[in-house]
Length: 281
Image 1 (cartoon, rainbow, N blue to C red):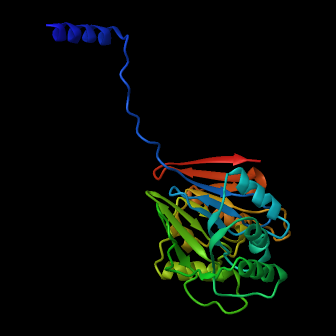
Image 2: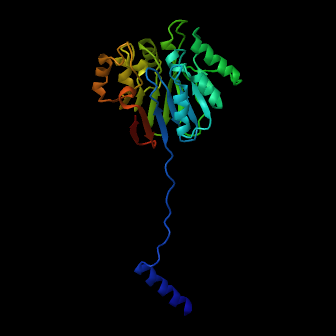
């Protein structure tokens, strides 16, 4: 009888709203964040994968090291699982030696092409000082990730000793339904070769090749990529980057273009199904 009375009382209390039952909340969806760091006329992209890996693609020019390192520290980066040098140009690898000295880096990837500049020599010496061996970045090579997939889709072949831009390591990342493509300075020849080789190129977000130069982002390439967003990493320059011609090539796809010289740091956040964009000057 006592049990029955207690049961009735509890029902009355619950209905009256005096006791709230605990609710079970589902865990937040892990996100992937892509930071296009404003390093002026150059490239530096930091990626935080949903599985926790920190990836750095390129490091701007010499003298940008302090800025990049400060940015990474602000993002609470304690080590870098993967560093990618897309090609030997100084505006892409110039500060990677400083990052290597400041952070423990587990793996370094770069295409199998060399250069004679001081920037490239400094990069090689820094890799050697950390007792690392450069892994070859080429089409088909996959990165070890806990969540999502990342695969190099370029270079697909040898471009000789002088054609450094077309040697660019091109990385495609998929997180659930969202896709990102990072192209370095890949130009028309490399773009056409990737299309012919039927590499996975479609992407929601495209890091526009070669700072928006007219020699990149060609029509047949964009027809395959069909980007919703395009990011141009660019600063004050005498090359005419980005060219009006290239900007017009994106119009048929209604691509929203973001430029680091106009917006500063550009940050994309992906839940795997939805992408949001923020800019910070």
